[in-house]
Image (cartoon, rainbow, N blue to C red; front, side, top):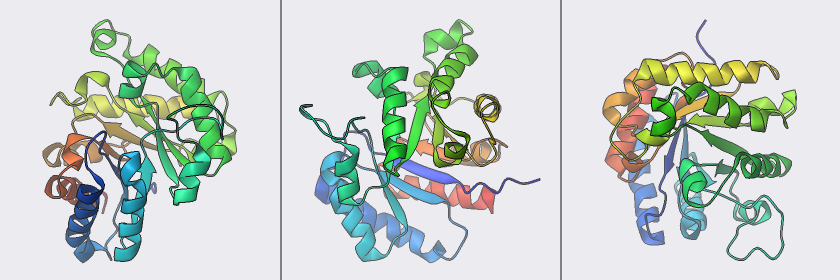
Length: 260
């Protein structure tokens, strides 16, 4: 039976785009997406830097574009003496309703841990934000045959703190660290195997069929079809290819064709 899970195509812009560039991108993307607006589009999520969140939100609203705006990170506490951090309440104040949590670059460069990822996930859910929870193994871990063990540890750390009712409210993204920004892509069958493994772990805590699981790691228009054709891949968390409207639309278009 075909999945009823609505696909998600999310573009993580990382530390790219000024406010003006972000607005120009939003307008350019909508020009391409609008002719297909009556089709069965995936959920399109834009993850700009903090400085452009409000501008992208306002631009999408003005265009009446069905784009979801997501933050790339947030603090797990509501407020306090945490210089430089952004709280869930601040995101809500901007109208932001989604947030990326635990991206591998946050884990690698900013000491994110399974514990902080869990705390942020709980904070997001507490405030009605949809978290995209990133998990993935390094090249060394993969070469040492530790992929499944690492994924299980990262996923279970979060799942252990969630109720069965919260499972459909979270999104997981499998992002093998060795495939992010390297041009290397995890082959579609292997990416699906790991996503299916994540779904298996979720099923031990409740119904996993409504939880969406994305693949991230050098997703491009020319590999989207193979990835999206897999049974347990519900979309993509896109990095470099989300920075240009043409390539990002190409991914959206392929997702439409596969999941039509």
